[in-house]
Image (cartoon, rainbow, N blue to C red; front, side, top):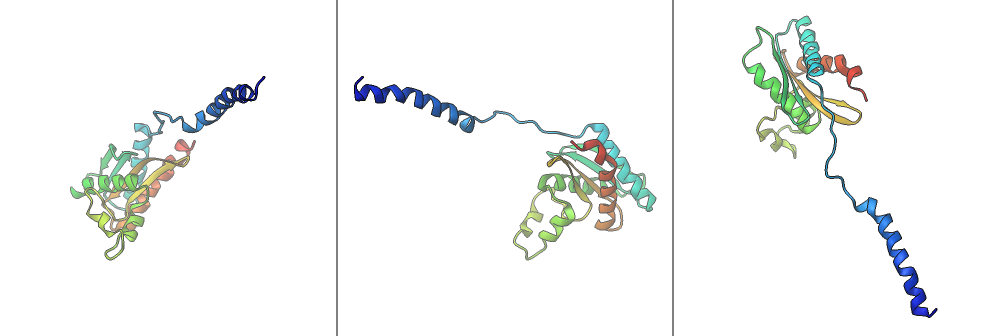
Length: 171
């Protein structure tokens, strides 16, 4: 066998082997799977948040949005102010969208800070009361509470909603 024929003899198998090795690295999936809360679990979180606020004597609105910010559940207590509906929904949307609690966003976007302009975006509510609902390293939803006296009190109610569903969402 000549030298050129011997070298060509190995070229085809070598190229085929390299192609097989590279295939998994270059191939990309065209879709992906996400996990979302069922309406029943979203309702449980909202009810627990409202119950916590009622026990403390607060009339509030509670909103739960999915990971994309689409409203799943909205509860408004009978004496909660009209503004609480929009505020709770925007807190939930902000928490889910930025994937951080709204109180944290409020602290990081104060006037004079590099990211203060975020507060000017539509629907952003940079005040306490919005929490991210996460499990297994994934964002599932956001919960927002409005109507308690201050962001800390709204946050406590939202956290009560998280605790009520913690066992149901772990995966």
